Image 1 (cartoon, rainbow, N blue to C red):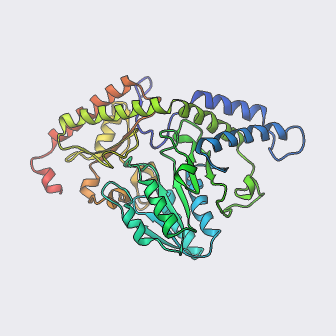
Image 2 (image 1 turned 180 degrees about the vertical axis):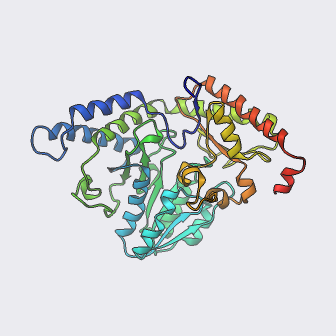
Image 3 (image 1 turned 90 degrees about the vertical axis):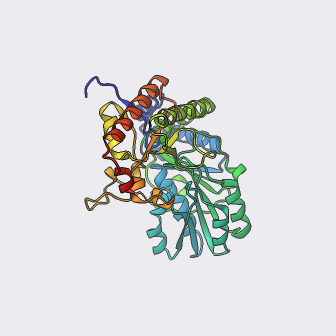
Length: 398
């Protein structure tokens, strides 16, 4: 649609790159292309850029060290599997509603003779402290937690959960997926007493293919990819200097404007929700009503098929999703059938209810004018779809 208006409201999946980050990456790629490990004159400039980015990012989370990765998923894998590899075989705990980056560690952990226990969650997608406590013990090697949920927006009761781990499994490594929270809300590793956190660049207007794992000073992690021994021996391979530079520039921007962006995106979510509720009175937000990320609006619209609503709004220039982009392209299970959303199943929605869910997510780049246009389009299309339903169809579907 050349020249047509396009409004991007899928910022939990990815974000438009910050122009300053793109410019910094281009400069680093052109001017500091040397291998950071080289001893000749072309190596040190690249090494300085890499070290400066590392030190800045380390400070943003209060970590002891930073390992650059290809993104949040690799950082999750290194934090979870790497910490388990550094310990004798035992149990690893995670939640049923966790991101696939966490849950898909199960196969490798099993081959390493660790047993993964997937814990049930509340209807808000939250891991209840009592549930965690029931499964803790001295044989627990790693506990993987999500701070902010990528689909529901729920913020975990992190401090309560970590306190229980320290009491009942003092030798366990606590890894936190910080992908959706980083840059949106303040976070300090020392304050929360966690051992590692995973961050992704493209969620904060930085580059795709760049992220990092921040480790506490006492954290013990084994490498998944030793290779040439880069990144303190924890992640081999020639470092992505432009990616690290772009990530640092984007992080500085979002952290500088963090409070204002959080307030604006929360107001945007409320505005869209109010517009939808005006035409679908029984529409409701998923996730915790109070503990939630400001930029994610997860909605169930009874009687409206989310996929159809998303397609019709996309045709009007408004893009949002029906769930995490990491569930697979178009929600396909690989066999041509629509894959179930494990998150919505974990919080107790059946298939019919799960089909009525959409996720709208905002960023600091989203304008008030875009939100006004999008709110009207979403509400209008939802109303049209409800009006087109045969009588009794909603009741029959459930």
